[in-house]
Image (cartoon, rainbow, N blue to C red):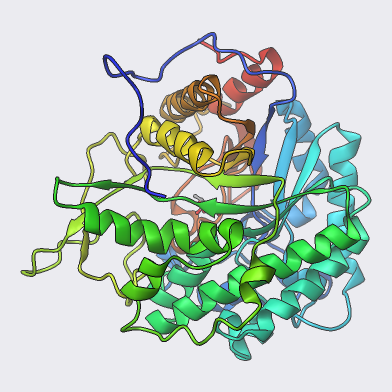
Length: 479
Ligand code: FCB
């Protein structure tokens, strides 16, 4: 599924269109994730997750930050719901913290944990905001990691049980479900590079984890179809838009596309792992973790595909002298997130850049949407994350974040252009509603359309938030 550079013709486009109109029914909203905003890490019976353990480990997170308090969203739910209503959000994508529901990852349900999400869902519905629930956004209960984590097949079955508990409790009110957020990150950053929790650096473990995440997805979809047959069900993937650095880079592009994209789309949507992926990783693993029948479990019809997009990736085969400084957009850590393909070199790309150092490339976004549409015709798409970090400052009562507004405007333009070319795009959720705990970068990176002062927990709507509110209200990209 390589993502070809688009079908754009003529002069290059700057993606700063205004006046483009989105149809009614195209959902525009925002997204967050539990560990990044909730805080209240030990409240009401919540158990520890791998991110509590990882962030408490010295050296893992910039400035030693943790999500123990974060935005204190758990205790400020009503205020944050009012903020969403003030912005006019049509949809809100949140994640459910498994360790609040089952503190040890299995067994009895913690009713107080469920009650929080029940209140959240009711609060959204009361404000006319469509709830979109993600079941897993990286916060595995630590007890399950202690038993092997995602390298253990049993974890997939525990996930299906957890899914059943949540679906039974919230299924009457949540119309849209996402099984996993970015399983590539869970597997390859969590178990391969070690930049994410649980911080393991073992390529074979990363590939096992990948398979068990795929299996968990399939099992969870089966449960959701049974418990909430009328709900829409999806998964969210972080597609890598891989570009070759020169004409001889097609091998590098193929390898990274296999590990980053097709390792998930092929089993989930087509029923099996790509032969080239199996071959590329043969020196790392024998793939004996794939059991007969797994392909059928993993391949489940989906109602739409969730797409997270931030920037593009540029690669070529390493010339054998010495690998350049890592420039794959992921925080450098001990191990490799690309098992079997360490000879691929990631090159720094042309700017402009966000505060993450990620290149701003709305053309890559358009290309991605078009190629997914061509590759999986008939499967609707939804942007479940897109946004940018910049170094914001509150001046008076305002945050003049023109760069973020420009980023959003250019990416909304790209999405609109894709829709004009026939892509069935159902919605667009901006990452993120609030500044929050940005994983290995802690609180040093701000992605919010609402600023959070971590000392006082004061929320200030940024100019980009006002821009989004105006887009939602008018359905037209503001000038
Ligand atoms: C994605 C994650 C999300 C956030 C953004 C910036 O990979 O899903 O939680 O960290 O990146």
